[in-house]
Image (cartoon, rainbow, N blue to C red; front, side, top):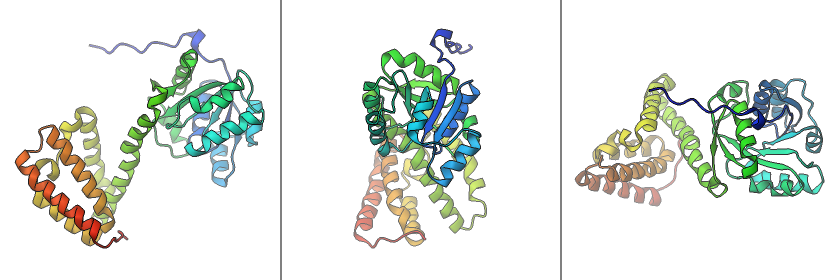
Length: 315
């Protein structure tokens, strides 16, 4: 049976063609502005400080002038605030206090941590606040615009702006996912746990394979990790495999011994993930209780040794 088609955005719900400004030309802002340009909107200004941010702006938004943040707000109907999370509240307050925010102006931030409430100073000045967080990792290159196709966005906005927020996401090629204001920190933690920590784990795995003499760790890991990710997304904990899920305490002990010898900086992470994996495998009936006891004993002993022993690094 065919899946039902996604409802089309009604013409009256679509944003009018807007002038677009970007405050903070990191990896995200120029890509979103470029996507909005493809949808018919017109980028008119961007603020950038570092040489790298200026290059990104030039590559993704050619012919768009680089100006001060206040000037961006003076020129744009839709302003993208794409700065680090910790800088966002102060930026919003500063722009509002200096009178840069105009009534009726759409002010959009892309922070995963915050909802629309962080934009309250701008809202009190008459702006229309939207939180649109793309659940995607960005490179700062043109490939990011292509990756927005089908990308989920965490959307938080006042009820009266919900349709406009969702329409903007759809115009950028994304799929809106409503996230309640109070759920934003948990939502963002979930994404960081899955994506950011994945990069660390993969990088460590490649380093270890290189030390083991594997000439092309990326080629070896690619099919394995792709299959593991696909299985996890399809089946959740039922996709758990490997020595921890099987209760192979001896193999886990051998792993830890080798890591202590060759890459002591990875031991704490291995033990933490092994304990979490064991707990989940046991809870879902994959790990037999009689095997779990020996396995958890190995992990507890190694955890004590890690706490008491000298701390090395993996260089």
